[in-house]
Length: 233
Image (cartoon, rainbow, N blue to C red; front, side):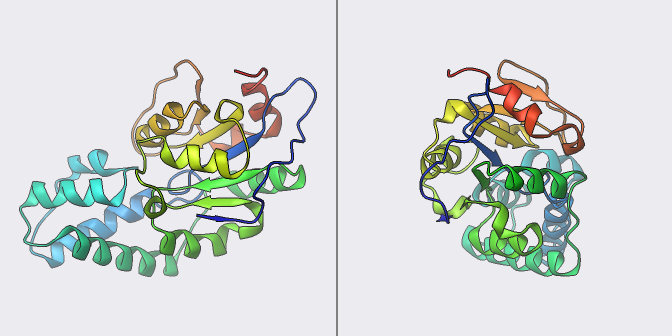
């Protein structure tokens, strides 16, 4: 976990209790959920196995240990989890080295949060080596804190990453707004007690208490996020 601002400077609009914004990476800020599946297909093809397209919804948004573990069991491939994880991360790094498209509205939202000094964290199930590569495109100056999936005891869907991010920013999880694109990430944020905005990327997500579903980051701005946290939970 890396941080440039260890303590929270609470600067919120009148009537809002928002203390921090916590953002997922793959499929939320960068259009890479499909990249992961493409790499998984390529790696397993090199190992002599064809992946069933229906498995894509099983592995999306999850930690490497879960997705890779599922694919090992589903295919019966003769490879260990650690070795497969290296192959997948290597393949993904090569893929994002060729192209790394941002999701519509991502650059504008990050710039707005930065301009208003909103404590912001990047919270991903991806490993640190991947996050650091992606940060070059997103702009590391937009984030006071980044949390990688291989830096917490349990990653998404467990609450640990979001609890770590809130703690690192000195924020109350109940006064944080989280933006996520998968059910796995939403579950992690909700378990941490955060308010969630879901922008579904691969599979649908239904609205629920403390969960708002939108079609694109274009629908999210700072007043929208402040409106989610109008009182202290």
